[in-house]
Image (cartoon, rainbow, N blue to C red; front, side, top):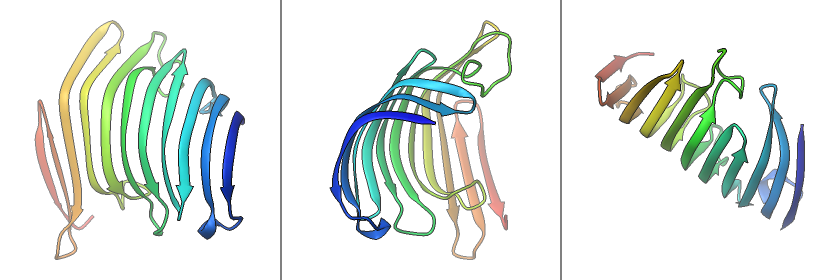
Length: 171
């Protein structure tokens, strides 16, 4: 369920020839049994590529997203930066807890894939703080690279403040 007050200026009725500029305020958006409020979107959809920004100033989520999603291939290609200044994962129904679970982080992604099995690319998670039950956890960086090798095997490289892992194989 979504309530949008905005402007769409464009042309084309078929997916392949749509070209539109989108700008608006999303008054509320229901997702995961939570009603998000105070979202703004601004972007352009052309040649099956969306380039734009999303800002959320909800009571339980303060977030900015700026990036691209390319739908030209069977599996979408994403390239974006998202800054979550504050997210109460309990209030947003992502975590079951009697107390708030607060996350803040910055995420930079350049990848293709629709699920964990076909994900290829890299992600950098930085400046992360997580608070649960009054305990504060911090992580400066986490880098994740997922790639296919010439022999068809899959490689995943993970490096962070506290752990470095390489996994290679047919998976």
